[in-house]
Image 1 (cartoon, rainbow, N blue to C red):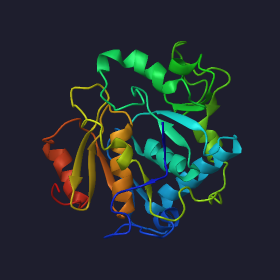
Image 2: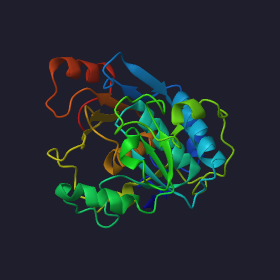
Image 3: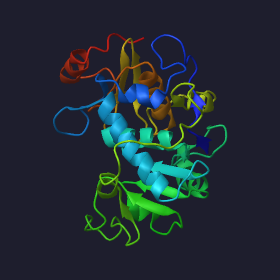
Image 4: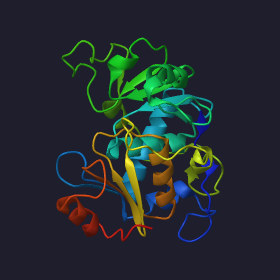
Length: 273
């Protein structure tokens, strides 16, 4: 478990938020923070202001349901703009964060042991946010379903249990401003880079891993079929700290197709860094 309160290396330098209120700085930005081409439909853009609005609502919901900074939240979500908004809200709430498939140690995990690792990473969770509620129906933690209503699934194995909360319905009722104490003080955008510095780079052969391409003016993520994980979260926090966007594209590996390459070029993120 890692608490989302660790400063990113380099905070206070370059274009980063430095000693300012990192959340307020993001909320004041009209520039794109997330661009999502990976959802199978049209281009979706969230400015810093809009992303922070979703983040504030999420943090308020977390707090209203009694999950404070001491809580551990397991995030089991596909990689799309909604999951990145959830990530920002959890960072604003200052809770601890784990992902399925982690062992909580040095990260040197074997994907073949994913079922055991899921149990290990989830065992201390107080709250689970998931798009696959059937996988967590028996877990004692609070269960929030993201991306589907509690009764949306027709398959009994995938259906949300009666105690599950429909996240998207509940979060929309929350206030647009978050007045919780800023986690970690006002020392830069909380990130997870230090916690991940000893983890292996994502293996493209691993199920659910996204390929990351750091660019001069942003981050490109080959997000098709991928899940939000620690590496993506860390990289996203890093570019947000610099006022730059995360661009999700509908492919899994590079080199990209001509159509995807044109999408990336249109976002003006530049060449690989």
